Length: 100
Image 1: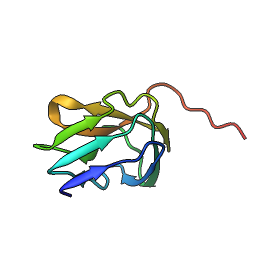
Image 2: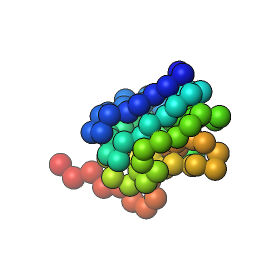
Image 3: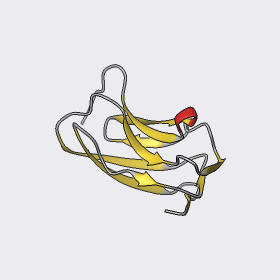
């Protein structure tokens, strides 16, 4: 994509496997909101390492650089890797409990 501006409070659906997932590549301008929702769905396997959600190598980043207010479902978390120009999906650290 030449440009991507995510709206504040917007959502992204992301399907992944044990070895990877879809990558959004932005070559121009990327604007990240202070808060967003990532709905991560495991298609197969278990995610044990990081995966690239957005690759903005060579692009201009604007907006939020702290993604701690983003809500992420699916047992993973999101992290900005600014030195490598990527937004990463990371496995959660520690136990994850599902109470019904």
